[in-house]
Image (cartoon, rainbow, N blue to C red; front, side):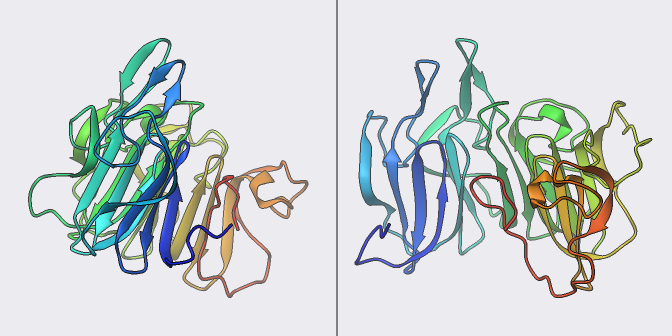
Length: 306
């Protein structure tokens, strides 16, 4: 479906019933539901339009007059966007309703419960290289991992399953630095685990390894036991250039262009070349065997690798 005949779009992201997009002129737009309702509890402004009216906007509406938006990613009830100057901005709802109570998860990273307009994360001169958001209704797991331009790794939101890598499962309402290394290059996350690449190409993982997603032996229990790893741990000695995280599968591209996967191979459709599509592998297997021309990994809305 063509959204607008008069506008070309650079990027688009969707959350729980709403969309946010950056136009070709670097302006920011949104449409869809302005409130998120679940268990009869309503959230705040999802569209970033400055109010909490219970409305649905069916056509793209400009949020900001500035022409400096570079990247956008929506969680279930919130959005984070990056400007061309490297600053991060958020709006939406910091909580998820559950058990008739509002659980404050801190996914906005501002310390506030909600925001109706784009609000600066870390009100200083902080600039960011990249960020990764997880959204999932089933576990209410809402958190963010981000890398600053100085190569440090930061996290905020729900620490469920040790996905923040802070050594605990606490909720973090503002960005918290994860260890002290300054050579992080890429980070991905979901409700079960997180993974990152450093500038030297090494691969690191933290969170839950129950499906063998770290590609480590089945005897690996993690520093918290039962497969839980609370801080980043190096996974292997290979060098990599790209990674993608599905809920039970970690995929990586090595620097030689080969694609490898570990965990639940049903996400690959044909399995891990070691059985049927529902095979679990606790070690990395090349997919497909012999190919050496992979450059990028993309996960679609349905959590499939494409």
